[in-house]
Image (cartoon, rainbow, N blue to C red; front, top):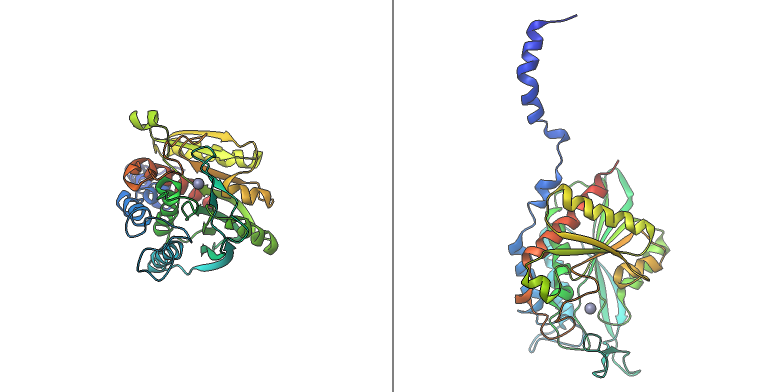
Length: 332
Ligand SMILES: [Zn+2]
């Protein structure tokens, strides 16, 4: 049976309906467009210059009541509270590393002396509960502390990751996620690393972490890459399960035309805060980092300053990370 009137109407209406087919359209580009370079820049300068020159238990801004890592925590919590998140704190005991200037210039940390003071340090969690698959957890993490053994602002290492996952939390604040999305700010420049305690606690509870994305030193790269204005990102993985996440990073960089020079590399053994989770048995873990091996000339030095940070590169790597999180969240 045919109806020429309806078919005529269809011929007119169908293209318009398709153009306006909002319910099935990809929502991800709109979220990516909300990642804001001004927010990223302000956060990096706040945490790595003024008012906080460092983020460590063994430095207190003169005249302030709390050490600079506690002040960092308070600022992160205030930001999150402003966007409607509750924050869970997980207490750990840490010491500052000692400094051994005889060691290679970028790696002068050394075990603390036995009588070194102990300080409380905290893992901070903000959690979104999924509406369809709440037991499946996507974990985004970044270490928020700066180098406890030396006076480096740690702008790339790792104010950028701290602020990147905060910006993702801001953009997702009104988003009804399918799965649970957890944000974790931990400490990795003191000893022991507090991500180890976080991973052990997840394991003890039996949390089903389906993906772990560590954001550390995004945009940090060689002087050659800086001079050539390359926007780089390397996704590190340790296991075959991690490789699938690295492939996803490459896919979203292409699909959403983010423009990163995106590559991936396999770690020889678990490393950094994603490694803490791999060692606890959570193998689907990656780290996004600006270069690998890490080639920032000011790595762990006083020159790792906020004004050197390539904000455009940080924005792009943040967008790619957010795109991967949303792809994982919205997968069938
Ligand atoms: Zn570091």
